Image (cartoon, rainbow, N blue to C red):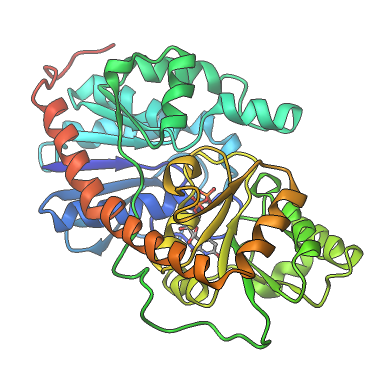
Length: 405
Ligand code: UDP
């Protein structure tokens, strides 16, 4: 099939770790690659955010990335991208009206891509499926006034849920949220994200450990809701271990990053300056080395639509201690591949980490079960096969072209 992936702000070619570059970029890159391996022809449409980018980049066999002119060709925070989505959708519709590459299906990632894709899809007869990656209702609940998303986001997300040919939820928690929003259940399919089990595996290079201390690793964009401040506070209850935080801007720019400065100041005030280390952004291909170097991966978000980092750690044979939120409830099996604690509870987190580090037998048992689970349940091959079935189902009821909503 010809599959159009729409990912307005998250390019599969971007460097990760920055504020708007994380799981969605990885998801789109890996899913597109797995679909190409399964024999499909994939084009990823993402906004041109630099004049240096060519119109099209062949990412690998079967996956081309198209840079869509929509708004100024410069980086723009995703929360102010909405005004450019009309231009994005017009460009898509114009492309899909031409005969040389008409998709059988479009898969939109994030709500703004959904708006662009459904508009272009309705005009050209291309069916559209939606993965939200994150929901405005959840963000609003947790961030309140600090949420900088456009006010209309929640209404658009609800409308998209009703207009799409299918909604792909990534976890049971997301299904519950979507039902509360009024998205019809018969439109929903649960297909969790995957993990690249060839790259993320226990065998291979290991990042250096300068100290003999047990290593607690935590990974992600340096945003408050990822809970790094809770991990640092938790470390007070974990004697002798080091805490390594991967993510954020490149290491040399960490000193200028407000969140990195706050985290370092917190570590100092907890008396942990010598045991907490921020390493900044790590290229995606180097991530497995960091996971392999860890005794435990801690993921302590306040909320998390899916959460790739626990899964990546599991695929490297590393046990996970996480918070009982979002996708982690499905991926981490409590008492078998790791432990879950309540979010925003550094003391419970500290106890869980200290207990696991002190129990070598349980750590090894978790590590083995985590590896098996990641390989059996979460390969991208499996996700691509399930989504291939969804794409086929929706393309068989393709609308006649020229129909406008
Ligand atoms: N990541 C990376 N380098 C970094 C930090 C993160 O490659 O320095 C990757 C990480 O391996 C994962 C993704 O970014 O694939 C983060 O995804 P997750 O779902 O955990 O969080 P999100 O960023 O979507 O909130």
